[in-house]
Length: 149
Image (cartoon, rainbow, N blue to C red):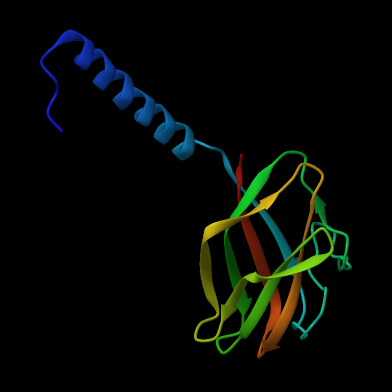
């Protein structure tokens, strides 16, 4: 787009461009942080088995309490075992979010980005559930990549 020639139009043009740039920078510079859990054993189907820290499995409705509004933007999963395969889902506030899962069917490591992020309110609880699993060994690691909103 060519810059206008009169001063009022030029001022409006610059204001519009600066506003668009500010919005872009705000979106692109939001903090991203990981929340990961581990399972130091063979994975089992339809199981809450992921541990945040001390090795204890975290049951449904429990997990990591998020202290501020944020969004799940991606998951990554690393499975032990060359032929290891698994599908792990996200649980938000005690409800399985089946559209927000990572399904490793052809590799033992991978990631899944979400073009529509899953929103979490301050005080929401994040957990993971293994839906399917085969050929896994210890140690397995799931990571939720969150963006602060």
